Amino acid sequence: DLSLQRAKQTKELNAYVTITEDVAETHGIESEKRFYIYKRPKPLDGVTIGIKDNFCTSNIATTCASEMLRNFVPTYDATVYSRLRRAGACLIGKCNLDEFAMGSGTVDSVFGPTRNPWSYDKDKWRIAGGSSGGSAAAVCSGSVLAAIGSDTGGSTRNPAALCGVVGLKPSYGLVSRYGLIPLVNSMDVPGILARTVDDATKVLNVVAGPDKNDSTTIKRDYEPITLRDIDLSKVRIGIPKEYYCQGMSREVVECWSYVTDLLENEKAIVKSVSLPHTSISLAVYYILNQCEVASNMARYDGIEYGLRANANSSTEELYATSRHRGFNNVVRSRILAGNYFLLTKNYVKYFVKTLKLRRLIVQDFQKVFHKVDGVDLLLTPTTLTDAPLFEDFAQRTNRDQCALQDYCTQPANMAGIPALSIPIQLSRNKMPLSLQLMGPPLSEDLIMNVARKIE
Ligand code: GLN
Image (cartoon, rainbow, N blue to C red):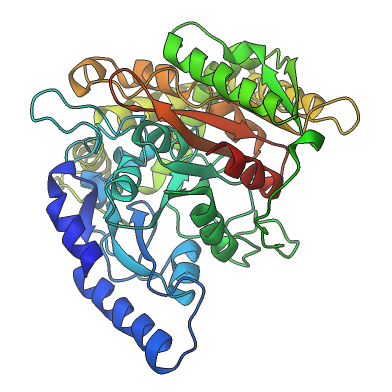
């Protein structure tokens, strides 16, 4: 009840697309009974959660914040949601996002932008980050204990960083994508937002593990993470010099060196390392993103799913009008660019070449995480600045917004490695500043345990 009340009190943040009041009450009663009457609690009994509105939830609208799916009500649950349900969690609502998760600010939603709970002054307010901005704002403002986001190029870590909460992008394949409406299949992962590393870990322990409905999940049984006090003197932490880049604010750099010193004082082995292909990563990400978007969005033809325009002179006209009305400019321009890169004459020149460049980025990480002469983890900023003012951010094109916000986050998606954003301190604007820890595939246990020492 308190969570529902809080969700309603904080409505002006626009964190939710739908508040699932009836569902929350049913879940709440079930978990209370288990807890007090049957004395057989489940791991997340009574824990309130929010889920980004690009995860399917049966009988609950799943809109992707798009006109195209405004009235779409799925008939099945995403695996993350069914696992959370099974563990006793109570769904408070579906959270706002950039349309189809394409963005870095939660400013491009048909339901309007989400505001950052740290700054919601009527005139001069700051963005929550994106595209899982609704999930981050819901956790930050206290209407849920944890929320699920998705992370294709940083969409969980980025809003977590700007709202001052913890944001985990797990290893690719550790958490099932079944029921997550795809953006870039080869990079998408469900993400977890929570107030503490410990809370995020508890949620991960419930949602992770193989799923027969997602053939890309890692087949090995999931070994739950145990939270413990680890000895940092055995941990080697790399500071990749290429992540220090143009546009990074002085405060972010200071915050980064403050935590580096802190780790050194705790006797961690800290060294400077190089990931030489970082500067091409963003361009590679966007080409691949647009190619996969072009192919994923083909399903929205006005016939099988979603919006159907009232245009019946020909099937082609029906497709074109439905897609024009259903998608915003950002989605449409990515479809166009993606289809251009995939044209027969361009396929090898752009798509195949970019896949090769992606391989170089993956190899950078493989080398830096080498067992003998590499490091165990990397420490970098999550974003280049604190949360921008909405009026400044909204003036930029989507492409520019993403270039600014995704520089430090998207390489991890390209390599499929885990990454965690941890809030550190406040900027002069009294906004959160956060750092990111990355590790080799399936190093969540180490990441979470080191992060506990930093938070
Ligand atoms: N900003 C990136 C994009 O628009 C990341 C999106 C995401 O991670 N969902 O593609």
